[in-house]
Amino acid sequence: MKNLVQQLVSQALDQLVADGVVPADQAPVPVIERTRDSSHGDFASNLALVLAKAARTRPRDLAERLVAALPASPRVEKVEIAGPGFINFHLAPVAYHELIPRILEQGHQFGRSDLGGGR
Image (cartoon, rainbow, N blue to C red; front, side, top):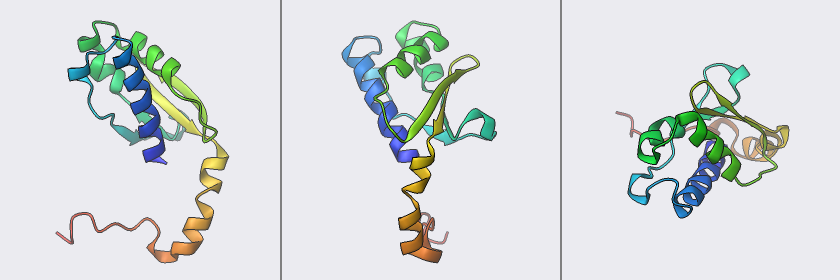
């Protein structure tokens, strides 16, 4: 799910770069995090806060442009701008329903990672 949101935000950022809103050399890979509070959605990004200075605009204005440039996805139910420019993503139930077959297939291995190699 996090990858889906990151892809959507990357596409929106690419559009803003193409439109000249954000300088191409200032466009980072968007960072998507789980929200601490579920009332703020499932995932959030501070990309507008990070890029506002380079785009020479207020973070909230940039967040509005990013949200407007987001491609539609049936897996995302709602996108909100919070505070000075955080973008919160609320996933649709179908996004979780699509995971059920993979969870059943992988069983106890679902969600495990070898990242870090035991160190």
